[in-house]
Image (tube, rainbow, N blue to C red; front, side, top):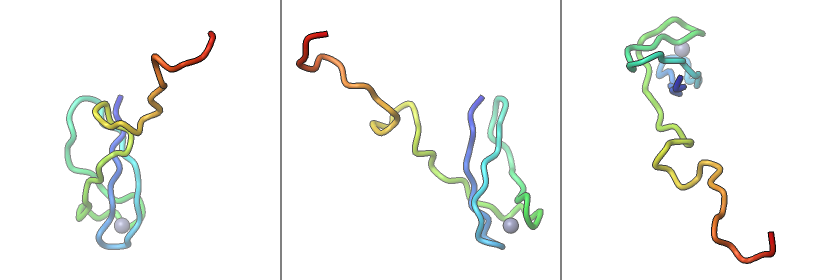
Length: 61
Ligand SMILES: [Zn+2]
């Protein structure tokens, strides 16, 4: 299940929320505020920086 990162505008913390199927509203675990902003996860399926292993590289394997 995907994990979404949020930034709280109130107390300026970042936290992660687990979403089962759809991304709904998240609450800050610190101040219980709903004024949060979803962050772009660095590890997305379309992101090139997601532990992508090099393929077709030179080397005797
Ligand atoms: Zn907060």
